[in-house]
Image 1 (cartoon, rainbow, N blue to C red):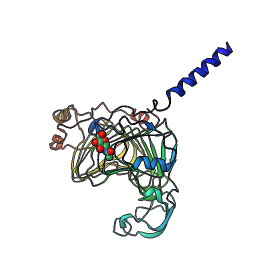
Image 2: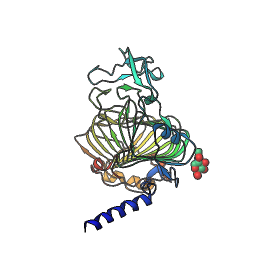
Image 3: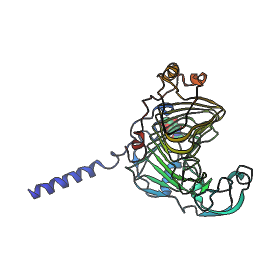
Image 4: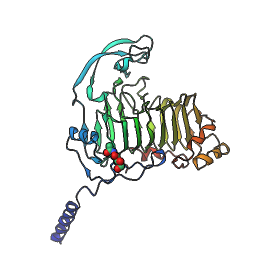
Length: 385
Ligand SMILES: *[C@@H]1O[C@H](CO)[C@@H](O)[C@H](O)[C@H]1NC(C)=O
């Protein structure tokens, strides 16, 4: 009896070895909404980079790839450290006690943006964090369980990069103590980008940024934006610089994301961005969620705002906040469904009754909407697929 159990055990391990790891790894599911059609590395065989340098090579080359991360890739220290003159901006009213100082990127410390009373200080930061890896076209980057971590460097799809999937990856620790310490995920002149089931934490600057270049079709889904930090521009352990969407021609679907412990820009919208924010869960936001500038066009439906002080800071663009069942019927013509009500707990009001811009959704791939649910908190992020 004992013998036969052992025999069975070896048979199972041999079987697994014969199957090999390649068969195990694949992108799970398909993007919904504007990023529909993103295929990433397509049918390219999946492989695990042996080192940070191999990961960088595979991300940046012009070969269609499925890149599997089954461990942490730590870029901290790979480009050394930089010591330079930065500043203590006006926003840092709690120096040494949970505030965020700044690197002088793009003369931010000296051009007035750092506010009145800004002082120069010396800053030392990890050089790798301040510039993202320029990802090439046709890539799938997928994590195994909750093990796929990129520490100390962001990913950047820019200058014509097309068709990239980032799924189940945790990006963390980009000089979180400094404003301008680094952006986790950047799109800036791209098309067909799908960010899914990722987690982003401890970032100096933006967790997600769509730069001014046209980034066309983007879906951000099932992703956890974790703003808990010991270095907060608002001095309250909440990250201010969360999501920035000001591209010149961007279609961005945000669905089923969990955005928590932030204090602003969650998201800031402007440029010429059409944003469909559906079934997301905002939790414990000490400042504002949306800040909709000129050119920002937002439909927010089926979301939960729980402990969000200001769901919509300002609207100088167009914003439809799905205010009532009768008003929400207007969505049918262009979004293909009646918009879902948002839900609020211990939060301010959202507002937003603009409807003329809804025609922008006409003919596009529009994500479906469910009733608002806070279950998103347990479904979004890494290790959940
Ligand atoms: C990406 O894949 C598409 C479709 O196969 C192909 O046309 C394009 O040239 C690829 N891009 C690069 C940079 O390899």
